[in-house]
Length: 209
Image 1 (cartoon, rainbow, N blue to C red):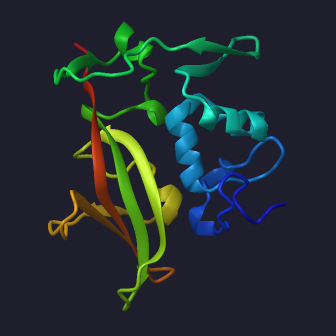
Image 2 (cartoon, rainbow, N blue to C red; image 1 turned 90 degrees about the horizontal axis):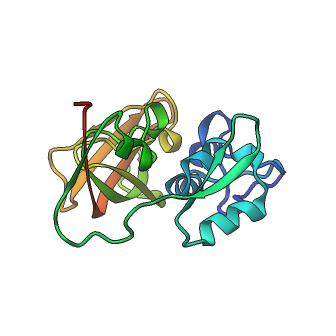
């Protein structure tokens, strides 16, 4: 079994692999957390069922600019359907989408792993690194992205820092849009998630009417 991510060739470790075996393909090859998030951003359904997909399918998904998603029918086969969404919204007007409505479902929002959070949604990009306790040297610098409201913690951050390590926002953002930290006492590491870029998706989610 490869010790490197099959997509980006990054050396795999406990700290940069999706938890609970989520990053394993049908061929038993593994991917890193960053590549997993790219797949999830393209198709949450594919990311949730990664073990059913071959490497060539994942590469086609990541290379494709088509706005499609894969869904599984009640009898077990997969069907690719077009998702009717606007590819560009530059009017500056936010569309309010209420939970448990037809529009909510059309956008692919759900509960649990698919819950997008309440508020104005942004595509956020973070720079992530850790410092060993007592040191200021940045290690394992990587990119991380999600689609979440600005006031939410980085989504699925424990896939990078590990289970049982909790994140908090720092009041001093050190010049970043926002800065989060997570202390891993067991491994003597302090993680940082710095928000370096944000892009409005022009969707504002709200609770059911």
